[in-house]
Length: 145
Image 1 (cartoon, rainbow, N blue to C red):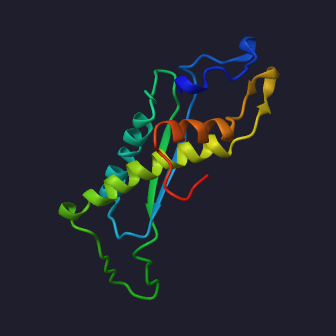
Image 2 (tube, rainbow, N blue to C red; image 1 turned 90 degrees about the horizontal axis):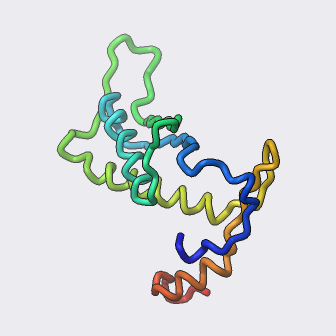
């Protein structure tokens, strides 16, 4: 973030840095029970935290996790559900954290400059600047620009 501080902003329209919300939906095809999905959703905050998010007092964050596994057989009165044991869920926790972190980064990189209600402007991040910074810290894979 320090490397990009020279981005021009409309200082009078910059909202308080502690104000804002995020909605994250975690979708998986892993067979998880409701309490396991709740635990998965709790890991979202760790991905946000890795990027500096603190979930301030006025934040209205919403995290939801669902699974597409265990589709119900409507004709049967007896239901059978497969589920992952709690002892095997850690890789999904790790994947959730990584996916949230990457989704936030992707949304920042893909964003375009916009002007919203009341003239509040959010400036896009220059891709050229990001590439320079990544090269400076050796964070680009071989074969990339």
